[in-house]
Image (cartoon, rainbow, N blue to C red; front, side, top):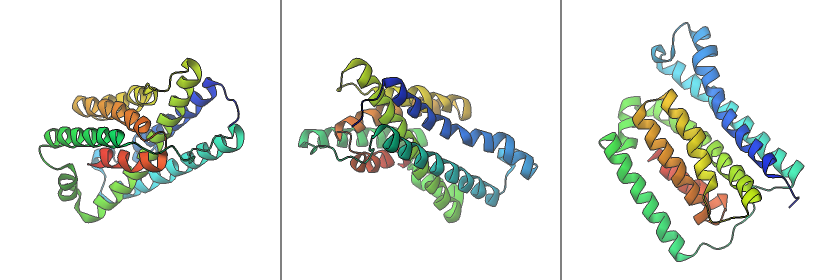
Length: 216
């Protein structure tokens, strides 16, 4: 792997965070002008079109960041990690269980079922496709900020990526959602960082676990 400065990794992490922020541009400026109504006044199809447009933007940003890192820095995000030990799987199970319990109390029931009944089958499918792409960008924040701080401080056992995810993606929800959602998302960001380290930085293992934490 090519020697890369920490600031360059951090810039890629911030590019991923900026990519997430493109949704704000769509939801509060571009689409209200097109639809003639604010976000809370959109029809089901307008909400679906919003998710589709957001996923296209997020997918393009994710692809560009991954390709840029590989070609410019010779950093392959898909590099395989070492074997995950039994104790690591047990800790992952504890994190997933804790997240599910917290989600259950926060939603006063199953988040998935609540969203299914609130949205109906069609909107539900598109919303979860939207979550799929959001998880990718959050993972990119984790990966590149983790590399940045490890380059600076030479410590590999601290979930720097989770701290940065909590401070960026997590705290943004205080402004775009509500206080309760903000708290939950900050805690989720911290948990995500621990997951990434527990799977030995292998995103093939990290992504499915993050997806479970994210949507359930």
